[in-house]
Amino acid sequence: MDRADKGPLVIGIGNPWRGDDGIGHAVVDALEGTPGLATAKSHGEPAELMELWQGHEPVILVDAIVTGAAPGTLHRLDAREPLPRGARYSSHGIGLAEAVELARSLGELPDHLIVHGIEPARLEDGADLSPAVLDVLDQTIRRIGRDLAASTTKAG
Amino acid sequence: MSETRTIEVDYLARVEGEGAMYVRTEGDRVEEVKLSIFEAPRFFEGFLRGRDFREAPDITARICGICPIAYQMGASLAMEDVCRVTVDGVLQDLRRLAYCGEWIESHALHVFMLHLPDFLGYPDAVTAAKDHPDMVRNGLRIKKIGNAILRLLGGREIHPVNLRVGGFYRTPTPAEVAGLREELAWGLEASCEVAEFLATLDYPNLERDYEFVSLVHPDEYPITHGRLGSGSGLDAAIRDYDDVFTEEHVAHSNALHSHRSDSGEPVFMGPLARFALNRERLTPRAAELAERAGLGAACRNPFRSIQVRMIEIVLAFEEALRLVDGYRAAPTEPALPVTPRAGTGFGATEAPRGICYHRYSIDDAGLITDAKIVPPTSVNQPTIEADLRELVQTHLDLPDDELRHHCEVAIRNYDPCISCATHFLDLTVDRQ
Image 1 (spheres, rainbow over the protein chains, first blue to last red):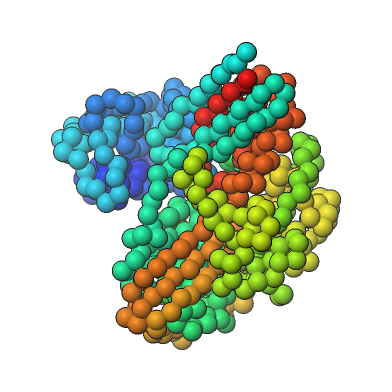
Image 2: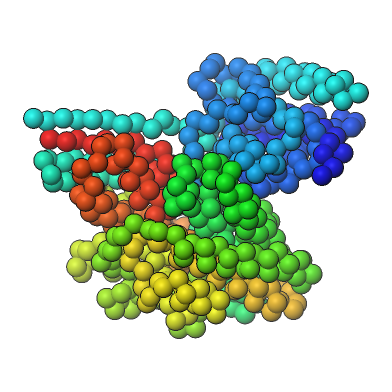
């Protein structure tokens, strides 16, 4: 397969109508138009993710992640290690970690996949991004930029 | 001597329902089994009041991320009933096609991601995928075809925005519809293979004497319309739903329980009920597979519901192909005109999990004055509890963790729409 032919990709995951769950989309909105960088938005459905990232390298996923840490805390997970799966599935959807691990089981995981997670403050219907999350938006984008630069250097 | 043991499964973010199970035993007797739904009340029926009748499909679609069409269609049918409009012909065909998409994506998610690992002997689909990658990959692709139908007809796959009272906002071009064909043809063949495979697996024995209730229709396997039918001979119009069934609140659940008004007995809705009451109206391939799987005239073993869901996926593919091939031209108008008039209307369709019933009253200006919505999982609660009681009684000798596993597997048989009650089960066994 022509892995890495299509270059780097950032996928924002989440629901912009659910407060800080919209952070993934907000990051992608900010990155859109960056030369040489592909971006996409997704609900996180595994088949869709696998199709989106096919041929891209590296792949960066951005999503709200609840660990119980303070709102605005940034998490970075490298998928070379299995992602921690808190529980399995619900009948309504499949979580991000499950989707990534499913892709790994199926041999559909990019060589280099990093998840940037942001601890949300609120997930209410119709809410905007909270100040705590807006405060770390730029920082998240800089951290993604560093990952992209590192992988370009390595590739070069 | 009394002993209480508590086993907890941690909760997760991004879950859309919360449930728990409580079992109390005394000696070798099961005294109490309660399936608790503590998902907070959502007050949809309350805040629909005062809204325009045309808003009901879009508002109620938000009730469920996996079966929004059931809510949009039920609300639309009820409003059309009040306003004396009948949607038929090509628009009705497109509605059935959209609904086939919902059945495919909802059933596929449940069969491949949630239910199948139980029968293959894996804790979850991620683990199962390592040994059965093609099965899981095909399952994801089948689900995606359902999503593609919803995206085309609904505008997007989650909470579609293109369905309305009277029809659609925009109808697709024949070329767009034909674009679905290749994947649908693949999906039909792939689904038939899976149905054959499922017939080779072993299932626990549990035969239950259900009172099945589903829509029945003389000409077709019921999806978008029909009359209320049951295994004991019920035959009633949708508008009689509230006479036939009584809803009541029980302390341990935020979802209302239902039972037959005449006998007080619980009823069971969903794939097993549809299959039993509409066996002779299965599509050809689905009928052939059911025959070969030895499912008989009716399947009363809830563990075999996975086979019936798979057969309904086959049926949905056959129906979708028929409807796609029959779509020669877009209708002249995407929706029939609907003028409000004061009254009460009724609508019911077969959601993936069973009958989804809607009743609305509107005034002359088209404002909603009263709303009632009954989802199938709510109706099925007493039956689920009765089945679990039977299951626990026969497995009381097991340690708590094994008993919990049995109960989790059993609850998944019903594909309950409190999603989490299935996998994030908080089981308390109170042994006295």
